[in-house]
Length: 163
Image 1 (cartoon, helix red, strand yellow):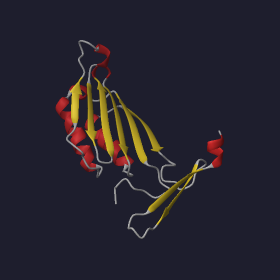
Image 2 (cartoon, one colour):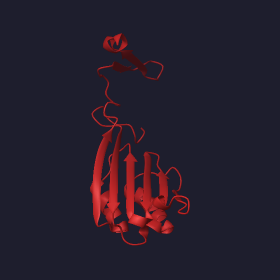
Image 3 (cartoon, one colour):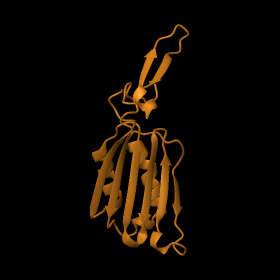
Image 4 (cartoon, helix red, strand yellow):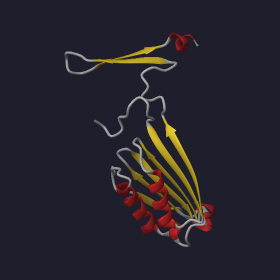
């Protein structure tokens, strides 16, 4: 069974958005540190890398207000993204996964790495209807089959078709 497969009462994905203000001097420009962060947080949260992280430096001569780094760790379960702005010591981090993860651990891990003076936190459950078998717009039935594969029937409800 896929690690993304959940019961009908659960969301498809869980997204933690962190805004870190006034981080420790120099961390927003530290390519090695930010790569190491992306590499380590995946394992620490019990997620699975699809490939090693990628991280890029923004050309500060072309985009002086965007000077910093952007990085991405692609996951089997989704992704972890980091963006830094060197001039203001600001970091934004997005952790999106289709399985639940320890939010407090993730926040503390980020705090330890970057030492922000302030951290704003948003948490979103995404795709809340994804696993529902009945909604306002459809009904889904799954039945056993003698052929070994389940028979899936998706019926669009009349109210949706009429509009």
